[in-house]
Length: 99
Image (cartoon, rainbow, N blue to C red; front, side, top):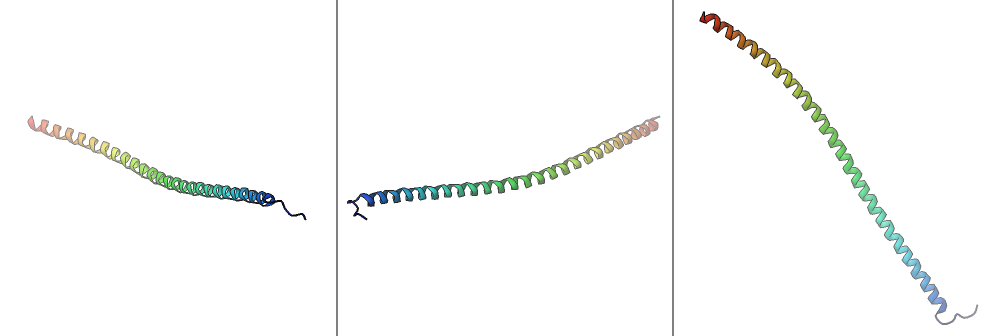
């Protein structure tokens, strides 16, 4: 092989190594960004799971509260009916007593 001219092959090799290092750095940066995105996605998926569980729990609680409200409405109607009946009976007794 002929002796390389001063600085020529070394500078070409150095330039190629700098480009390679730059490409490796860019690749490492892209990998880090991708890993961060994946961590964020995992955190969001966990939050979504927690929100779904909360929604289910709240839906069950709402169903229970609605059932209780319906039972209370039914009981209220029965009490109102009985009170009305009792008031009519008391009125009838008072009217009979006044005669």
